[in-house]
Image 1 (cartoon, rainbow, N blue to C red):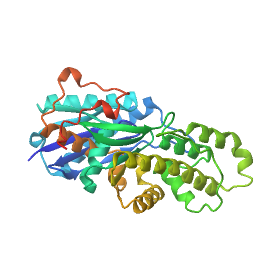
Image 2: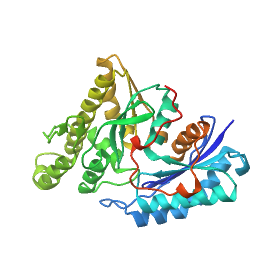
Image 3: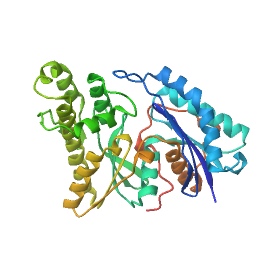
Image 4: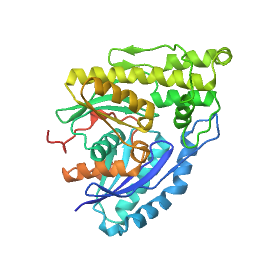
Length: 334
């Protein structure tokens, strides 16, 4: 029986999760929400995390109905992410590890999403579409590494959606992407937008610039709902195309979509349709585990802990650049 605490705070969400042998005991989180039309800056985000993380630690322990001495290991997000928020979480994790005399493990944020998705859905060896505000990757596992088959060559798909939401002055509560999704459901008129797939990679910056530069003229012919609909249809089609190509290359019969944008029901339906045509299976989780959370860091940390991984004290720093394929997945035996 292994009990793990995981801490996540790489962007505007901060969470603390506790897992016991794969069962989520608690998973509270808080979100830093900015006014409509604004993004979130590292310094302000870090101050938000500083103000709530101790409260979240206390809440997670109480909800899990455990005592700190029952924990076997403390895990935290080592990267990638925004520097200042990452540092806040790393400092708290190191402090608690010393106070409670527990080992510590630094976890790759992307690996956390993948391992949480696998644990929740039961997907065995899927092609992974990892889509969030800071990352867009098509991933497949081979020889102890999660290999990146394709990725964005500029901005992440979530960043593209968020920045368009700022143009429309949409609320950031609960998230810009969610509000775009709701508006897109009412869209009826499709605007042809730049569709940029380069081999296995995708590009969203030109598409975003196209809308930004022409917005004043476009809004005379298209409603905001039409533009949200058009943006979603275009960027999601790009992602489904590259995911299908990765499946064909690897011979995979499973797709797992993870990351905050993975909550989008339209993206899930497009992936499900593609999988149906290939006689494959599509796996997704809901907002509890798609969106950044502490339990996903705990789940990846659990796998690492059981495989004998420990982070030496001198290596318990954090880094903004930490690629998915930098991590040796020693816990996987296939």
